Image (tube, rainbow, N blue to C red; front, side, top):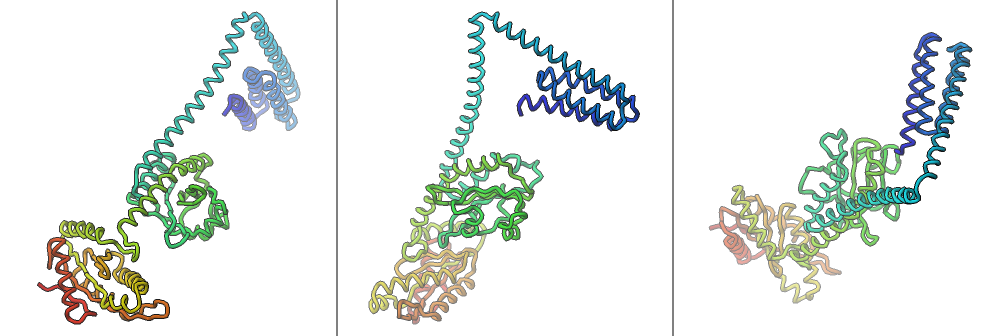
Length: 477
């Protein structure tokens, strides 16, 4: 707010106060006394804003007195007297201001040329000082953004980086995320799905800033409707009044939102969304600050996504998409340690495709590879979400089942075998029936170490092979 705005704000507040007192007064004498308060207002306006201010409030005061006379609040004589006083007071103020201006001009003329030059220098110094203050504020903001970008880019794990980004957003918008805030603000990050062009809500390790209430998936076609073809950032003041968000309102408890696309080289690699249960919660300043922060987050997000992709390629089999043997061994060691610590069972299934060599010899390796890929997908589907499925080598697979008994693992192995042989695998015009043999062992009943658990499961698998294949055997000591 400028100095002029503050001055006029004080004067108008005083004018309204005087009018209110006149309105609430009873009797012409009391009203007349309160109306005299208009005189110091004109004088104050002349001191603060010189002749123009005094003229404005002289006219306003005259209207107030004439209006009071017309509705018979003040008799004619006092009204005329007060109007004359207002005019005289304005004249005195005008003369005073003129004399003050003349005195200042005379002072300027009498000034030594050196003093005049010094005055110019002081004025320039004042302007430069104000510019430096502005530059310092911008520099501090840039340093803050640099520190944020440096901190985020140093975190390679995607979940950890996004959790740190949440804290940075909370620091930029402390009035929304502080404990004293009455509103409920949530924050979610979305990253592209590998199978489709939609955006999946990213998992979070910490729950200090919740993403509860946001949908699991944001469809690209809806984002295009909301953000346009260029995917521009969006501030939604009231979701219920905008027909574009009626379907979104039913799925989320928010009234206002910020949607910030995280764009790099014209490619959207993520979405940052903030939601509030209050309408009009996010100001234009909040919107601008969040957009600027999003530009820093996007670099760290790109780095974390590339790191995750490299990590995925390093521990998954390029042909089947299952985990590789080395990763399986590392996880088996971790799961054994966890099972020992929490006194939980840990089961292992070793699977081997029956007569797979005959398929390669009869139909060729391309058909064999297609059969291998389809079999791996079926094994992973039937093993369930808690299972870790790995390609152990060639046509052999390992299924690790945390907190699962031997009976439960045997049931899983039999379900896999039943599913494989009940549905032929289509490879072009070929329909190939396939069976699989399996061996099951469990910690701690059958083994205490990683090597022993694998050996016992292999032993049970060998028994299934020796007894005719298309079987599942449980290790018996």
